[in-house]
Length: 356
Image: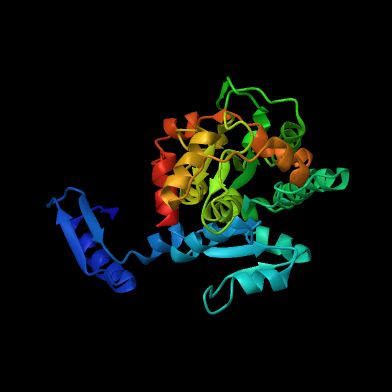
């Protein structure tokens, strides 16, 4: 509801009749009388207010696991979406016109026109890290993130003041903190010394160059759990074949978040001015990987006693096996301070919801 004030009764009635016909308001309530100021509660149908609340959001990485769900959420809430992609055909196959009317798909030469005039930009682009790392792949993992982030930031900074997006939500990862079996990391913790920590520092460094008038939220994302992608999609078939179990020792920490909670966190950051700076995108209760595998086996009705040895993972993923063989306990201190309402605080509830 919108509170409107007018100075006197006669003016109030004339003004009310005018605005009622303009906004098609079904009901006007008056409080007060005489020469006092009136308060008019405009109930329902405030078209202008609805327009003001509609966002125009440009998204990189929209065709990825997280990006697809975010676009679906924005579409459901009637926001305007601009998909920034390197492959128009891929984006069109994922977001067909019949299901996503009004969605704009833009390849790189058109990104400038999309970013200018957007309310916000969400930057999720980056080559997946769950693959065997060769020197060439490691270079591409880093450069794919830094290149796109730098391009987005340059386009934002070079926009005219009136057309410049007000918000940039840029992804990072909990790999920023390095690995540890004993330490607990929050947003104030220092960065680690390994390859992924280096990637995250440079990735965030590119985002931090955005114009200071733009509100920046850096979301350091943990392992995202969902049925149709990410780590869980690769683990489920193994468990269904009765071959599931802890990866490596099972004592490493597993800092996870349900896909829906991550999308809700990004969505909230788009419109809530309190969401700025570094925010860990992880659930409040990280677990040891052995517990995660035990819970997954329980939900699937499959055993989880047969460990997958480190040597097997290293044979498949090489240096990339460190993503699952090492870990870090990361807690979402900032999200909890902001009062973010996690739907899935415990791994058992998250897995049950995903597999139901």
